[in-house]
Length: 348
Image 1 (cartoon, rainbow, N blue to C red):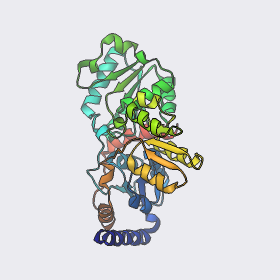
Image 2: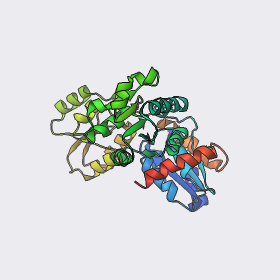
Image 3: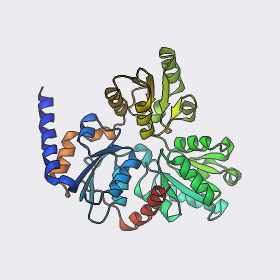
Image 4: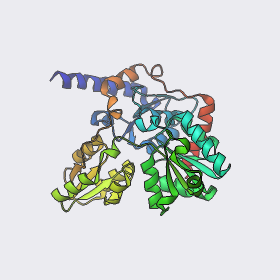
């Protein structure tokens, strides 16, 4: 029982601070957060939706982002001068974002432009990346994109230049390319561990899309075998997956889309239907609770340990030290360039 009492006590304290600060405080919660955190938020959504919310809220002096570090950084890039962005746990990182190290990205970019020439490649960077990569992108007239608008971003980029360098998620990049019917032999993977990313100069000249070798641990755990097993068990079910899954899994699914897409897909499906979802487990559990008239099942239990680092205890500590601790700060020069890339996205 102790735990529930302690939790209730923390929740009461959080609600009290929220009431005291009123519209000076806004708490943003990502879809993958645990239920008790979501319940305390002012807005929930995917990283894109929440960044927009952060950009639109003029009144808020304090933005507390319950999500992983790159998301809080994006909010800080878009924040106005009078706003501070805080994150309950500074160590809530993202493995995928860490796979695109700033030095290696810079090197890859220089390698490619040395071979194909300047002004031939548009960098597109997935929201799941650190501020430096977003700044690199802004500096080179690129844009940030999310899984909700990756196709639009690709089309926008191709109107500007012949080629795209996509960081840091190979799978989202490939699935988007497949969706736009870019031939497989015109999409090449760039492995930063290898010279020229493991490609020949010829490959680089021919390629339309360079895919940085990065991936999400949550979404690459799903396999086509998992899907076969679930289809056997639930023959009438629909399987919906996130585009950070491998192309094999995406091709074998009934629908694919961002976190917000998955939420809508479930909301719009018929009562009594069975939906099997390939994404983070906290979201699936919550959807199952919100739609008891539907059978909502995980394709496999896959948890994001970084999202899970945010809890009642560190949220409360963050709010008790509002404007003081765990402030997400970004170097002004980086902020300026990254802002361009995010603005390009918001204008898509």
